[in-house]
Image (cartoon, rainbow, N blue to C red):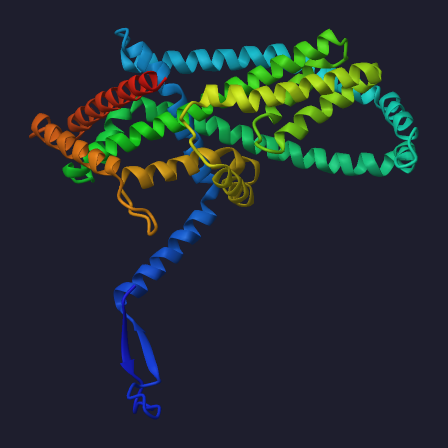
Length: 414
């Protein structure tokens, strides 16, 4: 933002100073337009947030499914058919899973509602054994059902409307992801057409890294949630706890949420095991706590690898901003977005105020220059769509070479 400093009329001069004490700041027309454009952009983002979230969800789905499509393409399957096959298999598996689980889950939820008085009495009996929790036992026994049912009905109606919106948004995101993957070459060509050729290699690296970050995050989330749900299901079946499938499904879904997921996962499992006696409840609590530690310290680093290299402070701040902006959906996409921002800072060579230039940065810059010269030689006089494919090929080759060098360095260090 530029500003012109001019005296405001006759300057008032302090004794012995010699400088005017009154100044006037005048914004240039360009600076004013920049501010107005920024405010308009913020307004547009806030009001179009649901649409933007749908686009982000579609791009995340594209990143998650791209490796499967690429695997089929390497086996001489035409891209259009490969995309259709991947989406058909995914849709079939989803429908089969819902068909097998939804009726059972509904029946088990109905069973939980029917056995609620017995379950509530069991909890109250445990609480009244201690003086500290005896008053809570009385409150649980004296719960007034009419008011509870009234509030529950209103909550259920709100949740049903919200669930319908989420399902509709998810369906739109799936269709958008399908068309993005079908038209990948044309869309990528259009993007490369508006970017100067001197930046095509860097742009292709950014797109490649975004696919790695988003795809790794989605696949990692699905795998860890499936493992959590499977562990809960097996544990509750072994301990003969009723309604195991419904509780396991809920626990697997809640494992998506960072930080608070452990409470929403362990709480229902331990409470459900309370009906089998203190010994079973203690065993279930201990095993769930051990698995949570195993997941956070072993499974998550192993599954995600280097897809999300985020400090704990960045993770916590990202979750706060994401939750405040878009609720649970914002919390789910906050981590890959934060990782993408850090990757952009690194790839665009943005010089941070307190960061000194490192030798590896200079080496990376020299490698970028060599890659850009090779790209200009190979993509000379090509249209943007074909040039984009060449840039993507060069970036993939460089990434593979860097990965091999890093593995060799790790082996040598060991």
